[in-house]
Structure formats: C-alpha cells, structure tokens
Amino acid sequence: MNWELTITGLIVIAAAIFVVRAIVNSIHGKSRGGCGPKCGKCGSVEVPPVPGRIGLPQVPGSA
Image (cartoon, rainbow, N blue to C red; front, side, top):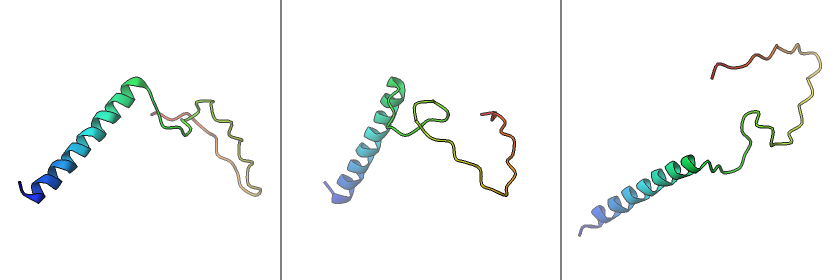
C-alpha cells in the first residue's frame, strides 16, 4: 500500500470521526462551555457605559 494512500485514508477517517462526534453532540445537547446568548447561566456583569458616548437603543435581532 502506498504511503500517500495511507495518509489520505487517515485524514478521511479523522474527518469522519469529527463529523460524527459533532452530530452526536448536537443531538444530545452537549456543549463545550462558554456562554450562550442571553442564557442567564453566566454571571456576567454589565459593562458600564463609556462617558461622553451616546448609547444606542437595543432592539431584538431577527435571528
């Protein structure tokens, strides 16, 4: 067997494992930490406004 074919096969297998793992994690709802948008789990403190700047009204996004 050629060494190029072996390396290509290993790369394809690694990519397939990555895709399957991503699908399984999305089905089971597992995430890798971090903070989701407005989920309420993070105890993040709101940043105080910068003096001299006018804040824009925040509207909900369409996404």
